[in-house]
Image (tube, rainbow, N blue to C red):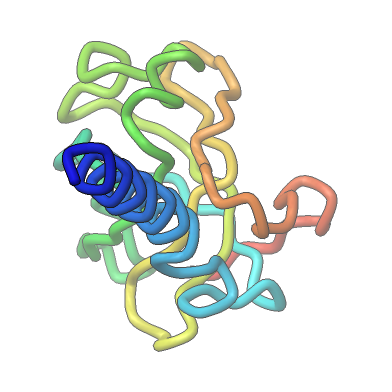
Length: 145
């Protein structure tokens, strides 16, 4: 009887672990939210960086033609992968100017997916984490604003 309960407990824990791994990889695909046919390249000033799981977010104030600023949000990869690529709060301080290369959200709002980010010191860093996202640089970027 004791062996059966250990076996059942082990199978249950294994099932939960497998489900959590699948959920982490399948919570949403790039194509569910972003449009691979709408590459963008925007330059702006960092207003906020959220290093959170499962996706970090960078918010930029992008200058418009009339001189006003529009706030854009860009999905980044997970904090762990960003740190491996050299991205920390210190590398993207509020007020620094960056350029984002990526793809626009399908809903047409001021959101996007950042494949790469050019930091104020000139470093070009991979900031996207979606495995199914296209490479923005291979698409011949065009500006959205």
